[in-house]
Length: 253
Image (cartoon, rainbow, N blue to C red; front, top):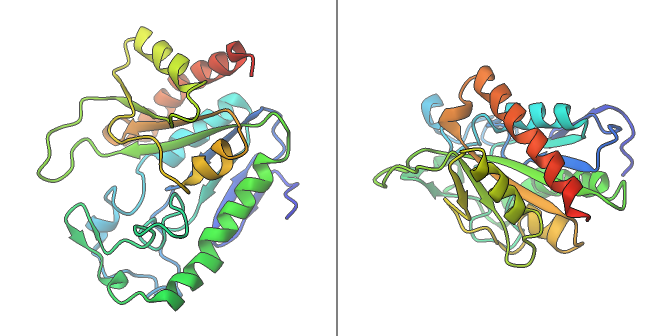
């Protein structure tokens, strides 16, 4: 696959600024809640209010990622299908690849998903996204990856989450995460280290495109109530982009 235009898209993904010169590649795995028409006629059987929740995508992550990529003059790639159709941030053998229950919500359109349907979703959505991501990542030998996600302030029946930012990392590579966390905390940003989730998952996007090839990387989770508006997205992009630039520059990687 060759990606040479500033903007590229398929049913599985979209790319913005492919030829921007930054070392950084910004990724947004859970960018949209779109259900392709060939999947259940464009519906997983959930009402609109459920599809607007964090179970279907990462609210605010795409706008924040775009703002960061623009400020860094970096390319951006994002998925264009709901994580409930098939989760691009899971390996192909992960049991949560096609979710049937998420944060208390049953996914009717996934109840009867069999191996053949899963393979169709892999072939049309999951694999093309990862192929394009790897092509962009490999476009320069010194590539660094910044994955942008968002998290809900509170899961159903669970305590509120106090963090503004969560930085997720693997024990295999904390070269950027540790100085990044230190800088955010010095700015007064309430920052979780592998909170609200553990940072390593075999076969996920960072494992596949950063850890395996030893690319410097950061995975940033922004609490989604902070980026619920375009103004919030822009404000957090403006706060995070210069820290990303400084940490990579100072790392010597």
